[in-house]
Image (cartoon, rainbow, N blue to C red; front, side, top):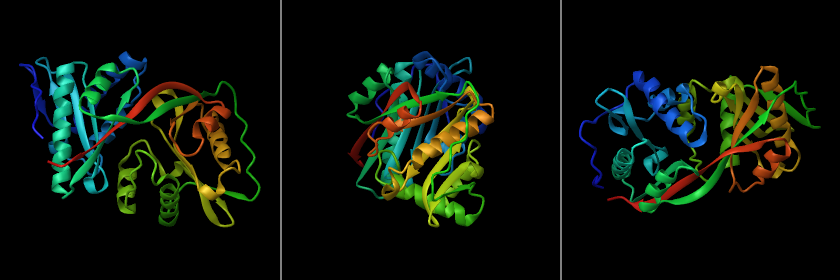
Length: 319
């Protein structure tokens, strides 16, 4: 794939470095705030993206810099397992810079697919519903919306009582040993395999990625067991500490154990823990095309949608 967009004169491009995280965070948070009224990212998230296992900064990232040294654009290409499913990210308030970053990230996606020997690749990205310029750019290049996500929040204005554990359920808090980590990963795979945007990772890669994250802790995984079998998982993170909120990053119940109130228990348990820790609320993201009635579940326990964004996707041959 050949790039067609050209950067304006006076701009320079280089690979991101670890020390660029604060400047990139300033760029992304200002862009997001202009669109949706809040940064919707943290410095830790930006820093983690730069050092994510499998991300080659020299080949997979592009920082566009103005003559005064300020960043005016940032793009990245992340090759997932096997490099057949690839995620691109790009941010710039300047349409011509955004177009250049799109071309460059897509060119790298093609390179990844070709290097891995694939005949075709699937490229994913995300855009706020209110980001008309990025949505138009994606539509122009034959991307289509695969799903819609709602960011949801419940506020904790007073102490939250811990819920009663359902009959016959054992709560296992933390995944601090190898066996529990293996079990947690297996439950995650069983719950989410086949859902939009979920790429199963081999266990070693999952461990490496999680250990590299500065916002995730093994103590934040909770498993529910019935008759000695792990049947549900909740995985939290510190992604929204900037808003003084807890974050339920992943919540899953094995299909045959759904409808028993396990998901509601895990959510209300998270509320109690977050409130006890002095958090103002709890945040999560929900895929509205989830095969389970997830949106109804979250609304029923008090969550309110706060913003909407879409997952965009295109499958194309490797040239």
